[in-house]
Image 1 (cartoon, rainbow, N blue to C red):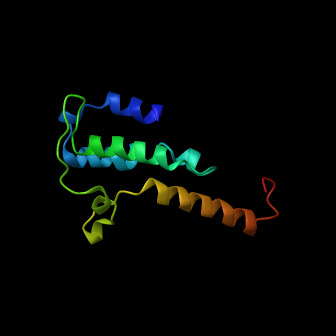
Image 2: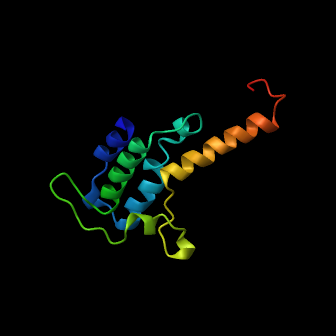
Image 3: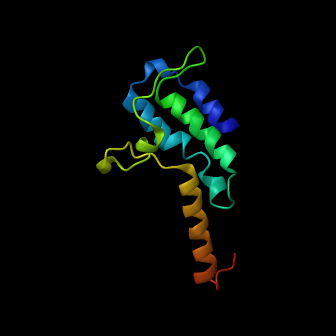
Length: 114
């Protein structure tokens, strides 16, 4: 959570366009927890807190005021070809990483780390 908040404090929302904020949310904010998600399940409360911070940054909310969203978050989590913004849900991403780890444990039993 601290890493996400530190990144948000460095960026100025009002100087970025919506596309710039969307790119930062997708490529930086929602990828910060990836390292931890590859090894363990992240609590839903942490996922929701990161989602809340990312959603506020994306729509341009600041500490002084909240701005209305142009699309609901679930609609934004759809693929772009289906009319969404292409944002990954952290809980789904965490499940994908854990399933990948489970597959490697079962399929690669000769590996040293297993």
